[in-house]
Structures are given as C-alpha cells and as structure tokens.
Amino acid sequence: MNQVFSADGTAIAFERQGSGPVVVLVGGAFMTRGDSAELAGLLAGHFTVLTYDRRGRGDSGDAPTYDVRREIEDLDALIGGPGGGSAMVFGMSSGAVLALEATASGSAVSRLALYEPPFITDGSRPPLPADYVEHLTELVGREAYGDAAAYFMTAAIGLPDEAVAGMRQAPFWAGMEAVARTLPYDGQVMGATMSGRPLPLGRWASVTVPVLVGSGDAGAPHMLTGARELAAAGASFTLRVFPGEEHTIAPKTLAPALTAFFAGRPEA
Image (tube, rainbow, N blue to C red; front, side):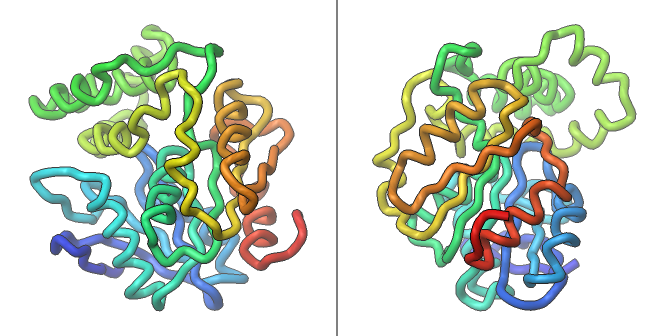
C-alpha cells in the first residue's frame, strides 16, 4: 500500500501494479481498492494500474466536511503524483459519475471509460426520495451504519425489504457496514441524476476526450437507458453494450474492452 495526500491534506491509500500508460480505477458505492483487484490484475499486463480507497473507506483518511470537489482533488492527487501528470480513468457505478465530473472540471484525464453510471431517467423504476441524502446523513450521523446500508439497498438499488433483511444476516454485511458511512458521499456525487428526469447533458459539455459508456443489457432497464442518454452527450462519447451482463460485470468480460479502448484500438 502507498499513500498520496490530497489538496486538503487527506491521505489517500492506493496500490500500483503493471507498467506502461497509467490507468486509475474509481470504485462505486461500498467498493474499496480490493474490489478492483481482479480487474486491475487483468489490465496490468498492458498498463500501470492504480487502485485506491476513496476517502472515508479502507485505509484512506477523511475530513469532517464532505464536498464532491474534495473527491475530485483526491483523483487529481493520484493523477498528478503516481499517475505522472495525466492518466486514463475507469469509473464503476457512482464512481463513473465521479470520474465524469472530474474530467468535466478539468482533471488531466486523457481517456475515460464508464460502466453503468446509475442514472434514473425514465419511469422503469421509482426515483430516489427527495430527502435521500439527508436521511442517509442522519443515519450515519448516529452511527446506524447497518440501517444506512439497508436504506441504500432498498431506496437506491430497489431491493425489497425482505431481501435486505436476509442480507443483514450474511457474512459480507459487516464489510458493507464498514464503508456505509460514505454512502451520503455517493448520493452527493449523483446529485439529481436519479430523479427520473432527463440527464443534464450540458453539465458535461466540456468533456471532449474519448469516453466509452458501457452497460449490460440484462440488468435493470434504467441502467441501459441512462447509458444511452449519456452516450448522446457529445461526439466523443461512445456506447458499448455488453450482452447478457448486469450491473456486476465479470472482470474477464470487461478487461478486453477496456484494454482496447485505452490502447486506442477498435472495439474488442
């Protein structure tokens, strides 16, 4: 494990493997750098791959007050330090939206790949409650981390209460509780993009680097709808649909597409 320090002094833990052009992997809700290990290993034969714990997770530090800009600065610190000043970036789920926001704000990203940013832009499922972030913040504020994780799974993911009740008895639930305090961060990253309204495409008009927007066609319909909308954001955006895949895509399926895209080759 290595560390880099963000603009506000927060220590961000990361790991590096491979050699060649730099690729940074940005995880979604609940994810720590270990969750990207298999994908990183598959990419490391072609690239220098950086995986990291987003602030408040794993071995990374945090600050008393959260702002999405701080997470962009975390990514900038990785790109500017171990990344050598410029990098290609892959973002998963809410991490895809964070990576997109960073690129739009001027981060030194040369190519950007995204998989299933969890936009809700149609009526195929309910939008997030208007007080979603506030309620999560209240739960986290009183250290009700299990309840925060459960609320995320029902309100954001759309699982039924009885399914989540069963999950709370599973061995993996403790790991989810350990990072649940950062769920409001993901909510702030997403903003109003899970409201059931069309995407604010002008928000990302400044993104002119090549962008690959990936989605499976076997998961929740709103995921593919949102990916298609985002892919219409500009001439540099391209949609890639993975047949039979859902929100959790197998690294061995994703890695060849990312390798080809980051190398500037035709679709794998």
